[in-house]
Length: 196
Image (cartoon, rainbow, N blue to C red):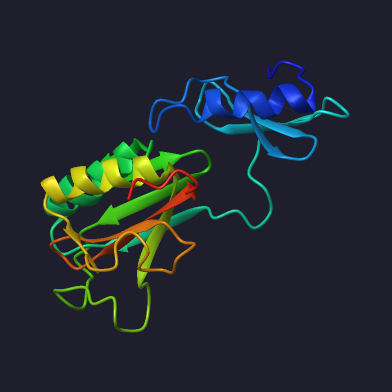
């Protein structure tokens, strides 16, 4: 159960919740919106509480993304690149089977599957369909740390001449591509402390 905190206390506790990418302490508290705080239950599911009423909600909101499934040509390669990055972002292995694996963060999970029903051998993000996945990252320093680690593990930094502002001057992000052509964008939530 989340502790009762006032709005100022919830604002102050946001840093404690988001203190470490992948190292979020269960039961920590953060601000979600005016008058709402959020934590994580023992099963890793997000919980929110209306500070004004003390009501507790332990379910995803209407319209929240449930899951994304990506078919990959080589599961081992995808687990080594995208799976590693997901774990660095705080996702935990959720399911594993011969042809696939999934990672979960809160109510949302991402699946990588090497399906025998795949109709093409290589993914091309420039064709109709999924172009890329974008993930929130705490700040500019975390973007740089995650991007550097990804490059050390086979990812390629896209648009290096424009990095970290390839998406515009007010958008601090790293655009990465793995060996199978999948693109991931890591976007700084707080880019006020740019590292460049």
